[in-house]
Image 1 (cartoon, helix red, strand yellow):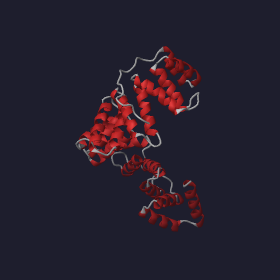
Image 2 (tube, rainbow, N blue to C red):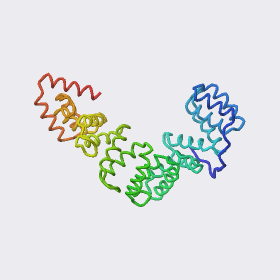
Image 3 (cartoon, one colour):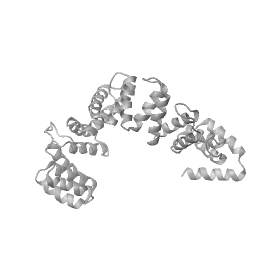
Image 4 (cartoon, one colour):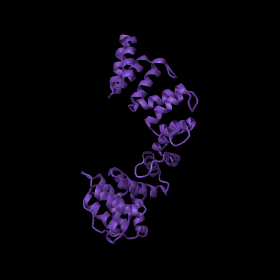
Length: 327
């Protein structure tokens, strides 16, 4: 996928016409045929919004046969008129091509980013960061800062990582924690974990175990297995939160199911000793065995010890349960 030389940088076109809006309304309700009829006429008359819509229909094969080349053609027409959504879509298309056309993706994301497209600013920053050189990393930070001006959580978290690592900017752990806090308060899962870890370790901020437990909980409830494992530890120890062995077992189980060996080992201990849950030796053997399969040596020792305590019937049950959970 090539990029045009010296592309134009026109102003963003005026908002969609009534016909274009009717097309988007039809699209939202799943009436792709009507959307296509409205947008086709609009696009033919030169509407960037109609061209954007037709590109979407052809790209995804909605109401007509998928045709990536026709989608690209419509989006290039819309992008030439300054429609940043079209430039962004061209960037995504280039990045997802097989093989990916990183040069074209950077071009089109840059076109949209300059027009203020926040997601394009993020995507461009990621491509620059992945380039691996300091100049690109520095430029990536600048794009994340522009996206962060709009309160974008992804950009704020990325700025936190950049400042924590000193990538593209001076290392500043306090600034990293501030960026993580802003992103976490906006509901960003990874930022919540990063902030919790900083608070637990006193990295750039004063140690605050209550705050760490709060943010680990937010990340864990959003599905972060590492946060679940750490929250399990805090609930078990009553560190930063009330001691609650039942809650600890709940979070260990969530992390263990995601494949974390240490959490699997901890879950085995919980079941073997009946901490916050009913004791279950076959279940304990299963979790010890799964952790041992990943090279966790204490889990292997615990697996072998528990195996000796099981009756023949319990051994068959345990092995059957492990086979079932491994599918």
